[in-house]
Image (cartoon, rainbow, N blue to C red):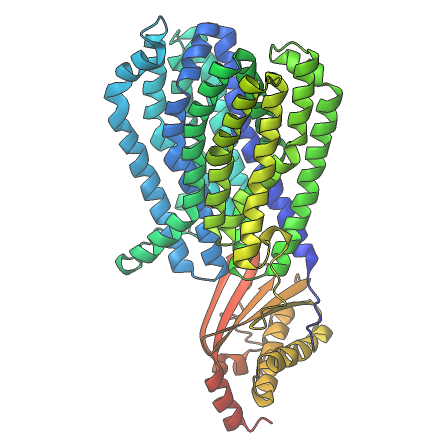
Length: 593
């Protein structure tokens, strides 16, 4: 006998669209501001200033390292813990993420006295050495501001404060661009003015999101108990491992790849690889909101073991983003020559062919991005580390060495060979990872985690009408049969859950759907009730006019040994823990069945 699934798609669809829209705005703003920064530096100061800023890319990566890793991995860990309704540990992750980000940013200040030394090495003590030193100084000085702004914005999105997060990003970028002009054009600070503007822009972003920290209604609190420190640190480190791998591997491979391309292919090889990097950049601007949605909404759904919702979310995001990928590919296939010319590359037959080969890699490149963000959200971090190591280091460098050998020994045309190398890296990286996932986990997370195979977890939905409450009895009966729970217990539990659902419907007229999840854990039945109505805590509500106590949860309160209510993702979430032995005893005392 199998379960008959009646599930609510409207909640998942609306939340996916909401998180995707917010993520797209935040991601696009973050990427676009760096483009505008370099355009302003070039327009106001010239090519030497652009070169000085470009030489400081490694300092930018170092300054953003702690903020990027913890603002990406922290919300994933907190989202999973929220889904499991472990609010105290989620608060610990929030607190630890903020403290580590601040500490890491302050640690970067230890490099400030060495900016002159690094600038001399990078510029070979050339004419732009002083510009490099000043730009690096302000970049490192901004590290704690960048990190704190990223972490606060990410957790605000997770806490359903998306408008606040968007306001923070817009304020930071707006102040940055305005001060770019003021510092470089009017105060004549040179290229250092751009880095100083970034520092003050992030400080402005923190001021915008500061009300979140002062709000009494926020979900995340500053809580970090000593006895929870080890477990909290383990959860945070596990979620951050893949993002740290991504950042570190990109820094290493970027230096190695550019050296090999410059030596064996020449300037055109480096230029084409830079264009390929820009394709990834454009794709992130258009569809990057999907990655943030997976980290926030996806991690919470996984924590709740709402695999149906997770599958629907991934399906929607795949449709949205691959439509954008197809549109981008079609547009650049038609306008390959103008696109190359915009980067100063002559639109010769070899370069046009190479660009079109690179375009073929975009679906696989985006698949890599989706997998790298999904694996930490479903607690498969090792697969994410494997994928990023293959994509950014192992396959990228090994295949490039083979490509170089083919160019030098087999006399392949160097420009198309670079494009084929890019395609093979993006194709083989997910192929190897997916085969590994299928072998070790038995399924592929991107295709859907099947909750039907796990009989100890069952989710279903009912509409917010009193006459549909009777459907709960049928679902509970099926669940008890599947898990060997005696029928007398099942009847008692069904009556109790009907009481709870009816209580929610009778006292909250805005409820359209109610999702119920049943989970067996260590001899207890964990019940999660989620509805999309106005804020309403069924555990605290008392109806003074209900003299006959028709609209209460008296039976459920007798059976429940633990109960909590939280407002997450703008929905009411009630969690009840019931010892099955206690349910059996109460059933015997009440004479039920």
